[in-house]
Amino acid sequence: MRKIVVFFFIGVVKFTLFSQEQRWKESVVDSITYQLYSTGKFKSLIQEGTLAVQHNVDFYYLRLRLGEAYYYERQPLLALVHFKKALEFQPSDVYTKKWLVEVYSFLGWAEEAKTLLATLDVTTQQLNAYKIGKEKLINLEAGIQLPSFSSSQETTQEYVEKNKMDAIYYQQIGCKFPISNRVNIYTGFAAIQNQRTQNFSYKEHLYTNGYSYQPNVLENATLNTTLNRYENSSLKSTNVNQSFNSNLQQYHAYVGASILLPNDWRMQVGLNYFTIIQRLTTASYQGIVFMDSTATDPYLYRYQTKYSFNAAESTNSNGISTISLSKVIGKWVPQLNVTVGTIASTTISQFGGILSYAPFGNQSLNFALGFSQLHDTENRNVILGKVTGKITDRWWYESTVHIGDLTNYSEGNGYVVYNVSDKITSKIGANLTYFFSSRLALSMRYDWMQRQYPVLTSNNGSFTVNDEKYTNHSFLTSLLWKF
Image 1 (cartoon, rainbow, N blue to C red):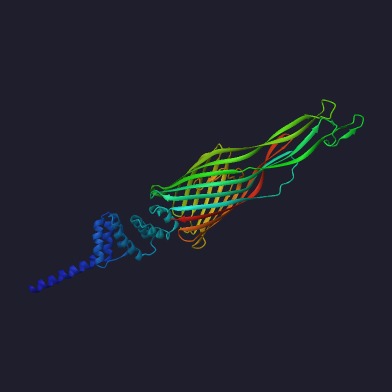
Image 2 (cartoon, rainbow, N blue to C red):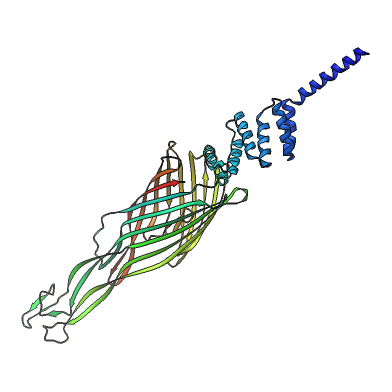
């Protein structure tokens, strides 16, 4: 009987040991913790997982589940411990890194969150940037545009009026700051000086009614010796050129917001209000009729053509508002935008979209293609192409192409408005950015533009407006400081 009891006791011990050994197998712990995780029983999951670790059971999914359980139980520091341990099992796992960004942000450790987020692909960055809020930053910009005109052909027109660009100077200061985890605000102020010259070329004529006693006034005249006067005169012409400064100044105030909506939709809104102060000179035609004081016949007269010039300054207020909606879908980012406003007392509207694609899923290379349709006094289409990417860790580039009439066209969430009277028919640009550090960057941009300005001509009282083409070279420098 005693032998039976001993054998029974040994059997119970062996069974217990065998059960304990089976109980703490990785597959058993994995199954139990998965069931607790999927049913949301986080406290039980923490108890089970803690015992498993104490029994030397340790693997990736266990640590990941423990991290999430502690996070949902509002214990972020313990969650951080387990997420870091999970990352040791799979160092390249994006899912765990996103959880670490979440915990860092919850703890207010913005620098750690930003550093880790910067190692992830562009799609993940765009979807998770709101969790830490975008950095506060200040942006300073300054630039100049210089025109290049081809040599003008001589004209036989009686009157020619041109308003040509001499140079454009541009200065801007802007700042961006978050007001919540999902809303970032950008405000900017810009001043633009457009220095121009108005040129008036015309012929000043002096006519008579056929005879005069002043031969120095007449051309193609013959002397009538009987009457002692000159007859059969045509006219005497003088070419006159007058130039006046025609400066245009613009002052812009801009405010924009980037708002993250549910399901990772992003909405951007912008308002650009600007005042234009322009000084223009206008020409008025006038003819002067006066009697020839040397004539004995009271019906003899001379007629002289002249122009008078008057300068006046005008001020008008303008504004546009824009809204866009975008969403990251894998490596693609579709965006739709609508702009409405008033420029130079003309109602304008713009509808379009941009489709971006990151073939490698990160910022090292990105393509974008856009199309916009504008409506004001006429309908126009604009096509945009853009390529951005990385050269080295410190050097980044961007190249853009615009095709179409850019009159009153806006981009950058309404931040840039092409409202200068000289029409832009195509634009090609390149930008280089150098990062001194993660907080300080310098950008240098060059844009080549095909432009044209109106030329008013008149012959025999009939006025015609033609366009003269020229090229424009734009140089822009920008300093970006994050803090």
